[in-house]
Amino acid sequence: MELDRRLLLAHCTAHALSIVAGLLVVVPMALNGSAFKGRCALFSIGYWRTEDREELTGQPEDLSHLVVQQWGPPAACQFATFVGIFTVLYGAAQGWRCLFYLHGRHDDTLFSSFLTVLLSVCVLFLSGGASVILSLGLVSWCDTVTDHDTRPYSCSESQSVPLYLDVDTSSFYNELSLAQASLWGVTALWLAQSILAFLRLYHSHSQHISRPRGPREKELLLGHSPSENGSPTPPHPPTTPTIIV
Image 1 (cartoon, one colour):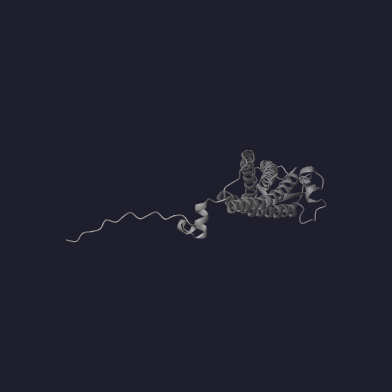
Image 2 (cartoon, helix red, strand yellow):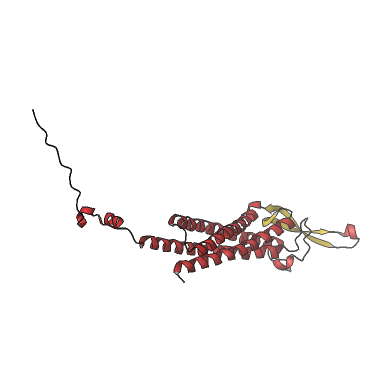
């Protein structure tokens, strides 16, 4: 198996894995957005309030519930979802191209390979930024839910505790933690794709340099003219003598 074929197979595998990882980002984020009625839990600001409900039940009872002062910016959740959707679409398109190249036994041009490297590096930084935002946002929401670890339960256990909000919080930790892990996996895959794209660019450049050239191209590269290599020069046409009257 030649080197370019191994690189294509590795790139196809990376694209296939990126499709799966991207779906594992998009689906949990969509489910969480639906459960929270379009609100973003990341970087939300709130506090716990304790109220006396004796006037309602007739018995002294303290009820603690979470009060959300401000929900997180929607862009924090939308950014992670965008990276996941783009990864799925790009992975499907590039995976099909890799299979086409494997069947046709050829690779991208130098310019196309360079664009692939540039795009992979750009999306690598975008996915890395989205991973950091999602991780920090989840930590901030967990601090709000657990009241900075003063509650007798952890963040994962708080999804089974009634928070008395007007949203469904029964599975927020499972959804956001799965999206977080998958998004970091997407970032790792974009790093692998950037490396593979660079190796394919280097391989294509090496093949372009070592490609056999014709005699005329070799002479131009060496700076020789055809007459210097022993080829006969064309004879000059005979001149007609001029008669001066």
